[in-house]
Image 1 (cartoon, rainbow, N blue to C red):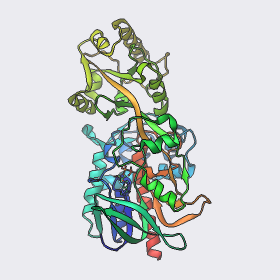
Image 2: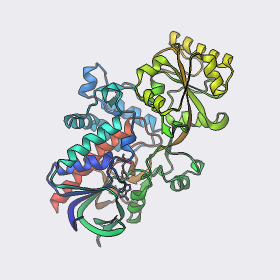
Image 3: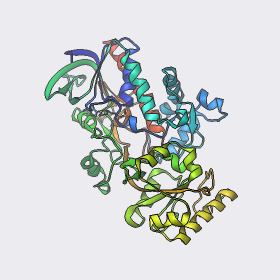
Image 4: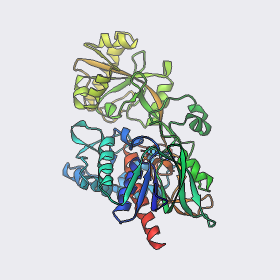
Length: 449
Ligand code: ADP
């Protein structure tokens, strides 16, 4: 790398790439350091959608939504632990984030419903393509067209540099085993969360010791610790989301859309035990309370046909398949009577539009078309809600509430947006919205210097 740039961005996931695109649009010289061999971080693994309220795409489909409703859903989903000002910013700017991406060529033309949302607001590609890769590809391609942006992969930022006044003035980055001092007028921290660092997660929440993770290997919390070392405040570090439906047999997270599109959860005795559309932490806790700390997602051929993600799970080989419920029951270790009764009760609930047992609100279809399927699932660490404290301008704050000059942060490295529980579709909304804010405000700060 050169000795000096206008702006250093730490991390090449969705937040870092959004910040990079926002910054280069203003003509500054930017370097982005990504410690892994590829861009994308956890973002590239995202499968649900990007939440946004009041988009043209929703309007076209006749979906009535508003930033206010989005705000309320997000606060409720986060048990009101969220920083309301950050959530307000997220809710009001999310539609602009989606049009910013579609203007760059992203396909987000399908809109689905994820748990915790009052209306369909999870934007994703049509035809079942995954939303994470779509967004990373769009942002990376656009970023690479810029003459003023340099991207280094296999480049791990080790620490933040500060001057006597405590302003951030650059970073130390390790490339090929050698450390370089790189100075800059501002730094954007976009290094993601710590879900793949079990030691760090268990330090903040001991119950999670030994949990699996859905995260990419680079989610080790470096950025949080680097910011803390120069005085940044941390918030909600013990708020760690476990995804309820991680498939240990495939080492892969199973998208919520499988439940959204009609799958139910049963234990190995073949019984339902929860409203499948409850928030992730409720569903996770209920699964951990079942025999063997596992459950099965059970669905039929009509659910399979509704969601192309399921084809990839079938191809990966971790989906149990049977021509009738009796055989499926056998495969999950239940009696055929119990599973058949469970399915009959559920189908009755679908038809009467009332789930008296568990109160599930959305039951899109009966489970009545062979073949039948089951996926073994268990909770794994999925998202770390806590992180460095920021304000609505994405400036990083100290414990006394003052701003650390020159340091901006966005995405999973930050805390406060999601409170006690992140809703599906809100991570992508967060990283694009606050990534842009961080990039734009860092540039405004640079211009003043
Ligand atoms: P977000 O969703 O907030 O953008 P991601 O996990 O998608 O988070 O991206 C964060 C990226 O930051 C990952 O690609 C990760 O490898 C990278 N990263 C983490 N720590 C460092 C570091 N110390 N130096 C450079 N990149 C880092």
